[in-house]
Amino acid sequence: MKVLYIGHYRDGTGWANAAINNILAMDKAGIEIVPRAITYEQKDSEYPDRIKELEANSSYGSDICIQHTLPHLYSYDSSYKKNIGFLATETTSFKDTGWQKYCNLMDEIWVPSIATKASCRLSGVNKPIEIVPHSLDISSYINHEQKNKIQELENSFNFVFIGEFIERKNIKALVQAFHSEFETIEPVNLFIKTSRQDLKAVQEYCNNIKRGLKIRKSYKNEIIISGKLDKHDYISVLKQCHSFVMPSRGEGFCIPALEAMSVGIPVIHTSNTGLGDYAYGTSVASRPVPCFGAVDTIPYLDNANSSWYEIDVEQLKFAMRSAYMKWNTETAKTESNKAIEWAKEYDHEAIGGLIKEILNDS
Image (cartoon, rainbow, N blue to C red; front, side, top):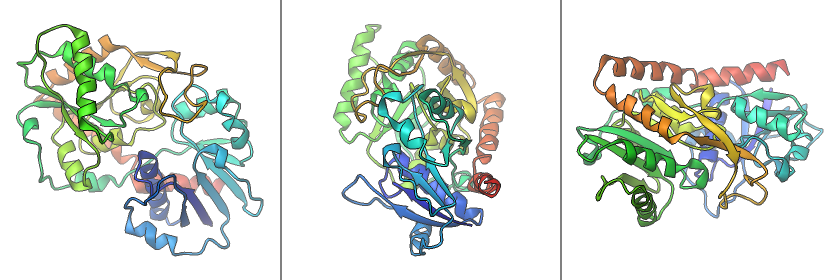
């Protein structure tokens, strides 16, 4: 079996990270895989040397083609025994995009979560759908030697959010919940790691939310890092935290949540999203609402004709308080160990084996 894998793995995005780990998981399982990159960027970001080695192989004679890109770019080629489209979505449907027509050109669709599978069906995708979760090299997180630290995170309980600075991630709910629940004198921090390069813009966004609360004259500052971190530094900082919070209105699969679990951090997340498949921690009640404000996406995607899930801020406050109250207890240690054990189920070896089984059955 030889697999051609087409994806955006050189783009330096979360999407790229998902593709990178899919490729490495398949390679780990002994699948002969040939990666080929397509990109929306002007310059390649760094990616693993192993994938560079695999790129040197010829794609001639490939039996299966996996296209991990936006569905409107899917192309059916009858020379392959199977054409597979890999898709992740964040809303209850994507009918207005027309993507369902392209998905139905494929022999099979792969998705990372039950939520995305449901979205596909509601959008009119009628081809077979397999759930193929994303993965990580979990051992590199568990065995990581912590060196660089953020001084402000020392001797305090630290909530962490890692994600894009976009409407869907709902950073507003997180900042609102944190400052509504915790007093300035409590030893607790909100750490935000976001891809936005303009640090001042992120700080001002958070300050506007706090001004809108009108609870007190002054508030604790968030600890914010914008832009990219070296992977070693990234994991070191992550290991200083105690609770990962993802209040997103929609997630096909949240890789930072899996990274947090890999270093023993339980996850607080919005219910009815892709995190419900795998996240160890607390699922916070939510309700479906029409998408609004997602002006950073492509036209017709995440518009008001589709829905995503709005987290209940009061319930989020309760979940965050509950996590804080467990700090330095035996319960916290137990939950940390459980988070790691759950994360191991999504190691390259485990997911690579799942992929191999699916391909062998096809």
